[in-house]
Amino acid sequence: MKPSEWQEVSQHVEKMLQNVNFGSITLVIQDGKVVQIEKSEKVRLQSNKTR
Image 1 (cartoon, one colour):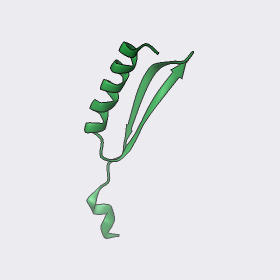
Image 2: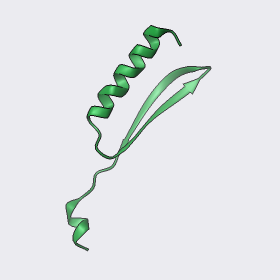
Image 3: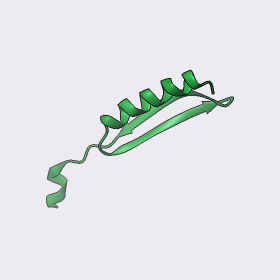
């Protein structure tokens, strides 16, 4: 990857990391390049802890 491409990917990942408490961030790579970034977030409900 070119430095400019890696900088763009890292900026997107950094933004996503600031907004997720529980979950995952996945990089999808094709032909050695990041083509997609996916974020899955889990929400933990307080009401489930009383069971």
